[in-house]
Image (cartoon, rainbow, N blue to C red; front, side):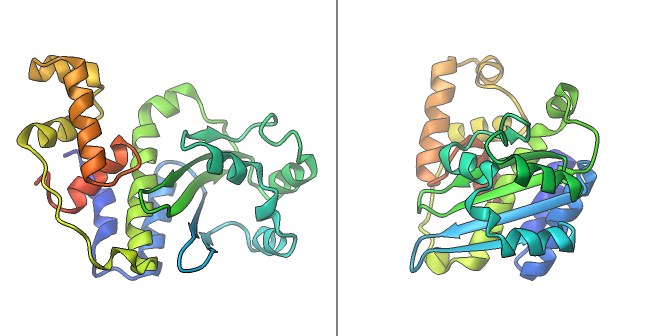
Length: 235
């Protein structure tokens, strides 16, 4: 496991309080060169509810809440439609120009976000943002795997603290090959690269990944890797 992965998994320490977890997530965002970090969790059962944490400027937080901007925020709407990462742009906010101008005036000019919905229907979104320096292709190539890991660690850790649905987790058993494939996936290897390393077909690699995702009730392969590490399956 890489050092940055080990640092991220420290966030899952059972001894940490919810506020300490949030602080660690925000500190990780700073290491990734983002000034701000926002996390939102949407619960459906036992009742519909949205829980939000962020370190945005206080004036913007008050404005966002008083005007119920959650209902019109295009990045949130996009996150509900797709779990692919998104980058803030004029095109994304074309139908909410006043909202976009207010956000930029508050210092929220550049942003990256990704949502995640787990097998139980609990959804969350992590947003990393800053006041300057557009996100470049080189930055994404260097850091997006870390950003995706942070999304999954935040979701798994905070949803466990917030949702009582995880009180009785079921035992998961992975085969040795599934563990091997997940370890390489966690190191950033593609299915093709893993197939070459293990001398198996790319289809076989994808088969093992899909099986692992199903067994772990994960939303994607990154979530499966994180979940496997958290439960000690890849130790």
